[in-house]
Length: 245
Image (cartoon, rainbow, N blue to C red; front, side, top):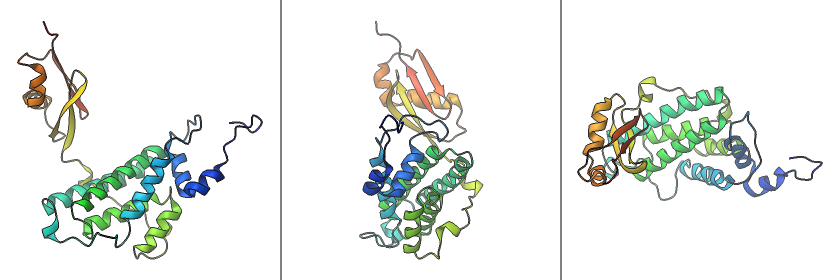
């Protein structure tokens, strides 16, 4: 963009429509901070919706979401708590690392992931639990450098002392940051057909056996042996079928 060419974008228009926090967060999210690139407002609505989601889930007493009792929880209380705490502590570690390296776009992406995990936990009946409160508070503290005004307001609404920007950076428990299980997409000829849930240390041979024993994969093999099975460790499994005669 160049002022002499008359193609400068006035940020005041976006600020008036979306607010300063949305514009600030969007500028940090659209790409690597040190690489620049052509300006486009495409995607700002997604960032605005993310902040609206944070606004809703961080209310101390959100409408229609009374504190959960153990009988209302959908699934094992222990499992739900462990999963949410693991997501919280992994996010604290990874976002701290990203901020230190000025990788703002990936940091914000991980904050969006934590927000989604909090929403799922709330849907399962965990609103009001210690793990849920811990996750929401961590989200606000991690988001505060990128969205200072919204997080300040929400921090006060949650009954915390002034100010969120004077709080210590949240600490994480290394024991909670290691994933107990991972989800591997299983592809057949490059197209997603199934998913496997395994531990990170599951041997490649066992992963291949599980993938080939999948009913969905077998449907595409149609009784034929695979041409080969390609694994990207920790990422995916791709079963290549032989050509049909």
